[in-house]
Length: 90
View 1 (cartoon, helix red, strand yellow):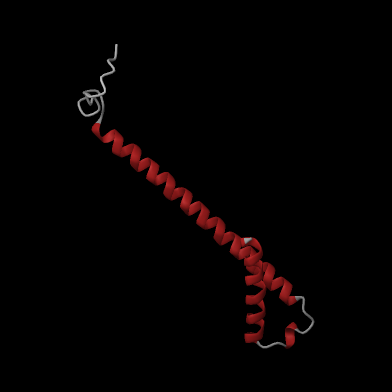
View 2: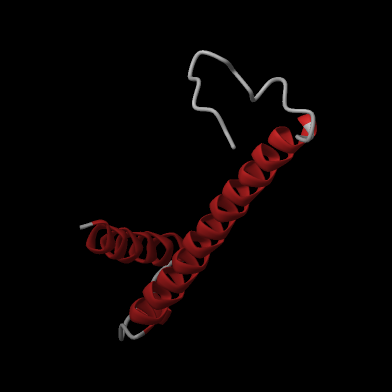
């Protein structure tokens, strides 16, 4: 039967506990957090790619698209993309 003596620290003197077990569980938690961060980062990258393709498609529908210079096209795409980003950040 376990004694409930709060002044005695049994965690340090437990002969059946593996001392590396605490560090292993900590490493597993850190690995899980890193995996979650990478998954979120990949999700953001995929969303950005979709927004960019939508912005390009919208700009290409302009009647004068073929007559604009490359610099003007890029500026138009950038404006549409930034407006998409503002909408999603709300």
